[in-house]
Image 1 (cartoon, helix red, strand yellow):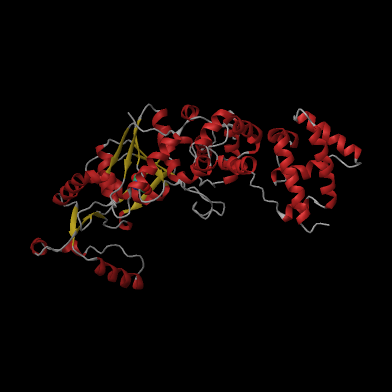
Image 2: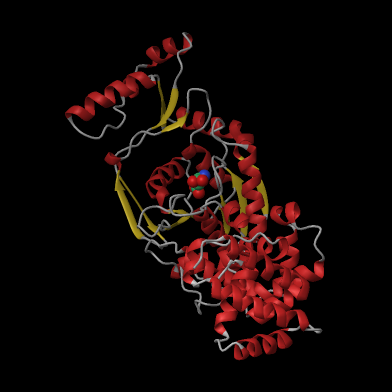
Length: 476
Ligand code: GLU
């Protein structure tokens, strides 16, 4: 059976690149009838945090990326890592190194000045047994280093194909630090071995680590798993995707109002082409068509606009009730809109839904439509040619609207067009300023739908306020 693991370090927010790794592990495990383990790599205790652990779990659950076992925390396995390191020490596959950080740093500086890239010079490998015993007796701190013997290591990466390295390029890396805590290489290999991991799928920033880990597997007389290294996700400037480009942590995407299905679909588009690039895929469909050997080798560029496009598609697929349920759970709603009647919110959702790219977009409109937070921007006023004449035109329209009994989009349209005809102006000369008056925006759903949404009283109130506002401006 295929056994996979997603092994994040809780030293920072769950990055969208990490989510892609989790998704690919999940899809491969599910498509193969295998299992997925969640392993939290928290051995670096000073940099790991419980908050980040919870965020990882919350993010994965939100996306419905499910795991079969765990979460396992590496901090609860320290004993096993130590035992393994001391076993390798006993078998002369590792050795104690007493060099201090300061000594190593001085030697590195000197070496790099004279010769180039420094790798540990094996000073302590030359120590005699009695010298080691003396240092141990005097409680001199030490690390345990893996002994890299001459040779060549190669492996076939599922994505990058043949990979190899000469051992002369690999340093005798540390397994156990002087405080007896394990390094990443040791804990990863011990756990991958004990968890019978068959496939390691992770970002290609780990390629150089893989050689060291294969050496460790071999030293422990265990077959290494198969490796697939996913190409790094880049920003539009072809540099590693970071905060400079936009949100990167999954919780930020959630807070901005992206839907899980849009994120999942977009991440699969970045990894291979799952058919129609405009379609929102559900996890089941992705599992059915997943093929590890079809994953792209090239680094994908993260395009926020494409994600927004897909998010708009995902929003359109939901009915107003579903969107309402999502919106009312959010902080902005809880803080500002709980007193508003559900029917009104539902009809607003229905009205504005087509243009909404994120749930946060809905919230911006809620402030305008439900709270009347209108900001009449000078630039927009100029662009719309709001003049004294506009004020007069809106005044005529107001009079007509006041006479309407059944205030529907149909009756408002008839009234507006009649008003334009009688006053010898284009309907547009009433439509655009009315839209601006009612919403302080120059784009909106059909203005007649907007009038109907507000109803007679509120429409008239907003128009009057706008007329007063024009009065206070220095418009010609
Ligand atoms: N904990 C490592 C990280 O978050 C991943 C280790 C692995 O997948 O082997 O980068």
